[in-house]
Image (tube, rainbow, N blue to C red):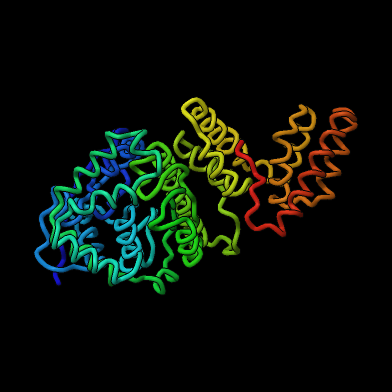
Length: 430
């Protein structure tokens, strides 16, 4: 075996930053760098974006000999080093996601964050991959088109976007047969099941709602094996989310990378403070309100929003974003959560008390249920929440407090019921 040769395309950051952070995007088997084309504009606003092709795919040369996925990870590191970059963010789909996991295992110091789409520490059965390799050697990649169309796309995608689907399938016809077969054989022996428990890079595991190749349960199981990893699902997508839902994937990746960068900066600041003689006792990494840009306010706001409302709620709200509501979601994330909730003058318990009082006064029962749950997250007891509503009754009126108690009672009952129902879906996007 020898390290395979891969080629890439690089998009500069649109903001003019001369030294922007780098995001590397890895494709799925049988696709090219075009798989990520719809996502690049969102990421390239503030980052340099590198997309590469697998051996024998697109403009990468044919594979000269067999290779492993770990050797492809080495090739990615070499490609990044060739442009003078040390640490980078990485996102990959299916085969590209497997490369990402190999990077996290074998090159942990090089990764700032990792997003694994529709992939796994082991994908499928070894005999299925060797059978496919044999079939491609016998009949070529055109024999894969019908099966790929069924596996790759959500049920309505080809009717909804025939141009994008046809383009991806047409590119499959041009992929080198032997290189494709060698990639299948690399997947047959790929297994990082035990190794992923040692990953310390921030990891996001993303599934497609209709993916039958690597279903949501598989990505959730992968996330459970990696310390601190998070699992999310892209609605309306199957095995190629970046092609099927590029706006949603771009927003998700932008948020993920910004959050990972903010978390790393907070960790570095904490380490610097400890080395300067500050107390080394653990404390929450709280974003700073000073010297904040719009981008960092959004990143900080998303961190706090997730911490207070929970990943499930925020994921549902993000999935429900439409072109008409996108600006409002950006507004509340940056200003409510990024500018106000991050200010050091009040702790989160106090902010929850104030928020409940304000919502009771304004009669905003729909928002109140969400913030009753948030108050519990922020350390308030049920008795303290009830006391806050009682206190508000004196100044905002008994009818408002009566309605608020009804909301709180229903919320508490729902939480009690959810304790016996792990797949509770009571949280609504807001």
